[in-house]
Image (tube, rainbow over all chains, first blue to last red):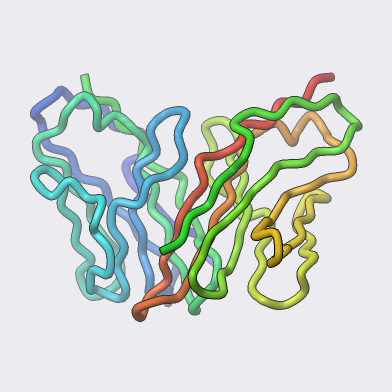
Length: 113
Length: 115
């Protein structure tokens, strides 16, 4: 089966600019996750969707970050405006049945200058 | 509430010697537990998972882990380290609660393998 797809793979922007990341999960997977992984740290959950509804966005900086999952399939994560501390790898993952493992995409490496 | 603690941020072993990466968890419900590996500049890959079946779980590349409920531990082991095992390893706890799967990552253990 095809894996989790993410684009772009790399992005360089200046602070205060906007950026968007796209994720296409594995077909049929109901749950989609966005993580932020800062260099040298573990992944931090930003937002979790079940189908097209949000089940956890407690760690999403809502003043600048937004995400949507239209039709319960692919998803977009946006940062507007970006700050220097947003430099990180943004990982998308999906999972199928309850208690099944997460499948991760390759990530988008964001550099904010 | 749930949490996971990886007891060592860095572990260094010689090639051919055993590997032990320690993980303790806390959960109000019966958890599922996972170990993921991340090689430099690569994505996260599942090594193995425990989901209430056998307590000794075998994974890829010769790794295994034992779920010990009495000790709330899920340590990762390998009998003989290989140079290609050098990577970061994450212990993850997952609980189905409130209608969805709640996932918590540990802070990671960086494994160095010395030739």
